[in-house]
Length: 339
Image (tube, rainbow, N blue to C red):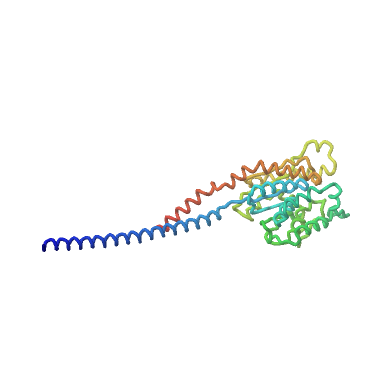
């Protein structure tokens, strides 16, 4: 009897001890599991946050260098239409002459539909209404009417207050230096200087500089893009025509001047072209520099050229080029935090 009671008492004590140990172990495991789950949640939050930050850091966009070309520069509207429709991010625009005008207006928020509507309304007669000929030794056209037209579109916008960073190129005709407007200054004043084709427009005086068309020194200013956004993929848009041999057979005075200007610009463009990751070159040689009334066909050529370049642009912006870097950096940081 005494033996049985001792046995039951011992068994009960052993069972209670085992029960307490199981519960203690269960509580301990529960605490450890909770801690692990909390750590995992924190790691996921950290990785998501760092991943988002680093993805934004490496997120790619393009920089557009829009070239000079007078009426042929209307092709820039077609290029921008395609890029906008395809959702291609543009984080920098540089421009010379007509490229400065189109790029500046676009960066100021002027809708492409409005630009295109104005361009398509051009006729031989309406083009003349924007010209203000003046007898002068400095140029044939004063340019005040064009300046007033630009003011009606964007007012007195400052270069530092645009939707997209812009750099506008002009040329100091006395020193031969390239002058770049960016960061601050009146947008219309910069455009007016950049479109001042020598002999045709009266030059613009800014402080002690006498400024003419940016195409004289840098017709497609690809090199300027890096100063606006060094990470943007540089894309050059050139509308400079190849000089046609047929124009040289019986050249007029205007043919000689325009061909000489085109030859000069083409040579300058070739020296900078290698700086562009992608080059878009609409075939607009059918139009002369004054044929704004051919806007429909010129804009369509810009669209066609942009569509041809689109696969290459999308490849350049593909995340595959930086995902490996992103993954390595995240892995390194995650490993460090675990130590």
